[in-house]
Length: 239
Image 1 (cartoon, rainbow, N blue to C red):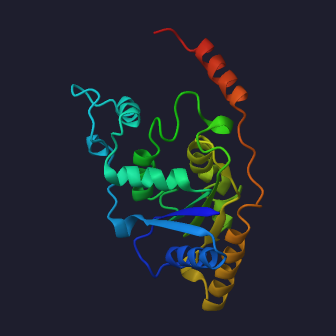
Image 2 (image 1 turned 45 degrees about the horizontal axis):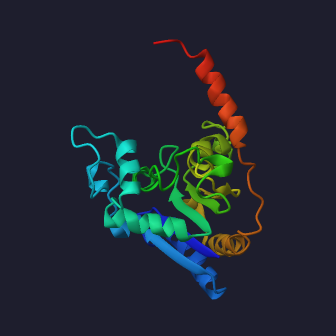
Image 3 (image 1 turned 90 degrees about the vertical axis):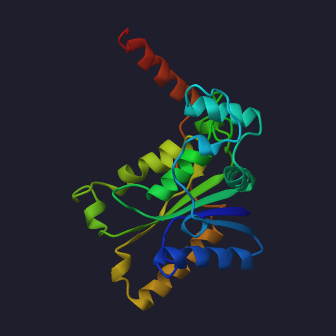
């Protein structure tokens, strides 16, 4: 397997750091290929604007998707973004390693998605969900969460964790074609005792070894999605 880990935590000694190191060491020992983009170590800029491009499709106004499509056709992405896009294209498995902040991705990782998942490189031209550009590849979210599992349940303050991760797993990863496996979730990392931490890292090691065999979430069929879009357009009020 060729595994691409996008790591989004500012502290190397954190549990997120330990999880990425564990995955990297285990996969390399098993003779898999591993590439890590440590976004904080890279100083990755999450702001998406004209800095994304070395080409200009329309100088009069920035239309992000139009500029992305133009750059895709004219070799026009900045070297930094092109390198990240190349890593994404080459991988068999993508891992997002991040802490859940404010019920979502850390800004640096969301900005990476905004800039790297560009029209023409990650989606576009009817390529989404089951016929997405990354169809046949797998994706895993490895997530640490400050709150308890009870707080992220049907009866909890935040509701089911599956609903919170849905925009990431379905709206981002599945949309561009990835087969999304069940997330690896760690609650209350600050409360984990050393002995439990070692056991947790061992479980994660076993999890990454089995990524190519792990059950995946059922992808949305493109025909069904197209039907939903057509029905929505049919009932939309005229402007």
